[in-house]
Length: 308
Length: 232
Image 1 (tube, each protein chain N blue to C red):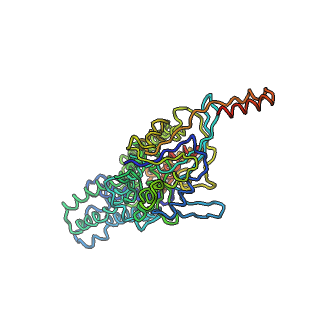
Image 2 (tube, rainbow over the protein chains, first blue to last red):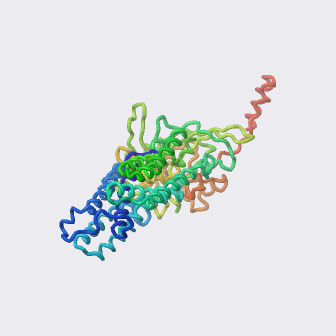
Image 3 (tube, rainbow over the protein chains, first blue to last red):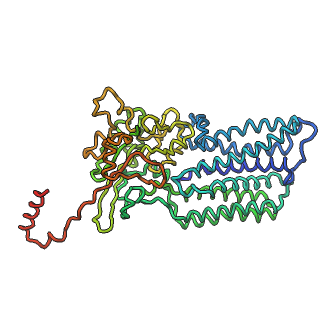
């Protein structure tokens, strides 16, 4: 699959924004890891400048940047509003609905905080946590629901998107909330789970595929050897540009190693040294490489018609 | 009704007439234009709703064959391209099973093309919307045309008659009978898209004995050749 830069940037950045918001809400309402300030001050309106709200704004900025970037891969963005209409069947439509729903729910949540409606803030905070999980799952299912791309049509894709989003959020949390002093008992298991899921995903890419040029052309029963003689057109067409993106195994094998080290191993080491911004930078670059690999190692079945 | 095509791989000669007729008709039809980019340059580009690839097929104990393989939208029963469409631009008609793209609703996200195993959908980059075979929906129901002309452009133009159009729900239609007698196949049946269009595999041709002719005299060779031609 052709790795469109806007899609790589969108999925990694918005994943980090959603993960960061998840970590902030979790920390604030359930106190799993420490916050910069315990709760809000007595003066309601001065609390607008409080770190918790600023951190929420940073998370919102991150996923908004990602969402804006996602519209760059639309060839006809003026119809983008219509993508809210097929909620019942399309994962992309569900993602769009939930992504846009984030904003009013978040606004109500911040309102509840400012007016010190604790019960409401707790309830809406919980709703936001669920919404974030559902939203990232929808993003993953856009890819995982495609039977045409066997490398994506498996259980590691949705598990991966969820855990990678959480890891990105945790890395951002550690960096922008330095007072938090994340405990290694929190970040090591999370990073480890991400590493294992990515390794399992890489392993699953080696599984035999059910489609081949024989099933594609219908000469399957004859077990004939089939080779493409002529594509019938003189330059690369839309399908070839979009779906057939060939990178040699040498490059992808190296990229896999760099991705695993940069996204998971190195951030763990840097966090133990409390170099939180370095851990975040390494993880973010590692995730961009992970998403690039996610596309270039995904092989659409149309390649069988082109003998590639 | 379940309208679709049969494509006879035995008689298709790979002339690209179907693709050309398709491009001509649909450039000005309901989904037109089909914008060409760099039409007179080195890398001409643009959406085609039908493409013909050519394969060399070599089965064991058989001579190798050249098979021309036209592919357009197969109007699947489980059309995942419609399921994934977030805008509702892609739809499958209840009444005849034709899969269409509403050009006014498409936002050009390409996800339907990703979901199609057959490469049947191509983005018109000038217009930013997805293009695909309409089964000439603007022609097959046109009461102004003679009944025999109410067929897709590709079927009408095919010089060898290798493309047939009809209703697969009707067991007595030409396409149903052809599919039964020629053992028509689905492409990539393992994906479960249940394509409507069927491909009729090449007939098993007897092997031509090429080695025997080289040893006989030219006289007997020509005589033998004439006899063989008459016998046909």
